[in-house]
Amino acid sequence: MYTEKIDFSKDYKIEAIPSKDVKELRERGISIYPGTTQYVTAAWNDTLKRYDGTGFDENAPHISRIPSEKRDDFKKYIVEKRKELEEKIGLPEGYLKPFSDAWMSDLCIHQIEVGQDLKVRVNGGDNVLRPSVNYKDAILLSLIMNNDKFPKNKASINDPQYKDARFYLTTDEEKATLTRESLTKKKQAYLLFSELFNDKKPNLVKANEVAYKMGLIARDESDIEALEMRMHDTIFDPKNTKLLDEFIATCKLDNKTLTVYNLLSMGIALSVVKVSPDGHYHRGGTNYRKTKHDSVEYLLAPGNEVELAELKSAVEERKKKHKAIG
Image 1 (tube, rainbow, N blue to C red):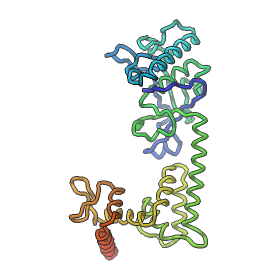
Image 2 (cartoon, one colour):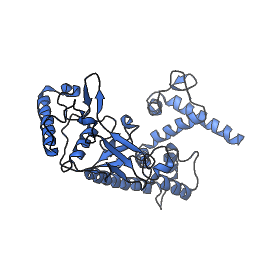
Image 3 (spheres, rainbow, N blue to C red):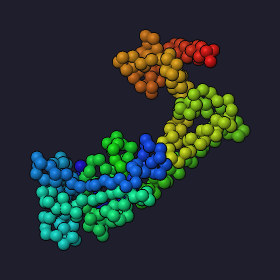
Image 4 (cartoon, one colour):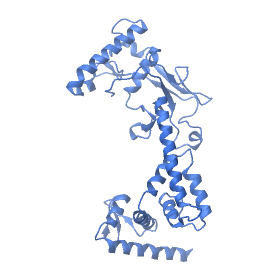
C-alpha cells in the first residue's frame, strides 16, 4: 500500500500498456482488445470489516508499519484529505471512512475502457484525471495509488509485480522526462553504431560480435552493408526500445568479455557446454556457474586460462564438424 502523500494538485493520465505477446495489439500500442473494461474499486476485507485500499483509512494495517516519527503526521494528512473531499462533494463527515458502504456506490466504482477508436476512457470521459477539480477523479487517484497491481508510472510497467496490469498511471512530466531520456539513448546508440560502421574504417569483427550477442545473427556476416542494414532496422525499431538498451550495454563490453560471452553461447548452442542437474553450466567435468554472466566471469578469472583455451578449441572443432555435415 502507498505510504506517501499524494499530490492532488496536478493532472494525471491513464494509458494502456502495449501488449508484449500479441503483435496485433502491440502495433496498436494497446494491451487489450477494444471494448475490454477494467473496474477500479476498494475491496471488502471481511476479517477487518472494512474496505481495503481506499487511501482514506488512517487506521489501515500498513499505516501502523510506518516509522513512528512519520506516522502521526501521515495519519493527520489522511484525515484532513478525507474531510476536505467529503466537504467538496457535499457529503456528511465520515462518509468516506473505510467501513462505509459508499465504497460500493457509483461514486467510488470506476470504469476504464479502451474504445473501438483505441482511445482510453475513464468513467465515460477522457483519460485525464483532474483530482483538484473533480472529486471522482480524486477518489480514483487514491484507489490507484493504493492498488498494488496498478502501475503508478510508465517506468514501472515492466516490473513483475504488474505483469497482469492493463493500464498505468502517468503524468506529462514523466512523459517529458522519458522523451528526453529516449533521445539521449538514441544519440548514444547512434554514436556507437557509427563507430561500428564507420565509412572509412568499419569494424566488422566487433559488429559481428555485437550482433551475435544480441541474437541478431546465427553466424558471422561477411557483407558489412547487409549487417549494417539488419542491425539498424532492428536496433532502432521504435516498437522495441529494449533492444536499444541492450545494444548500448553490449557495445560497452570490452572486447575480451564480449568474445568470451559469445564463445560460451556458441558452446551451449553446439552442446559443447551443457547444464548439469544442479543448474550449473559445465564442459565435461568442469563446472562453470549457473548463469551466463557468472560463467563468463568464471572463464575470465585468473587461473582459468587453460579451460578458456580448451573451450575455444572444442567449439571450433564442433563448428568444423557441423560445417562439414552441411
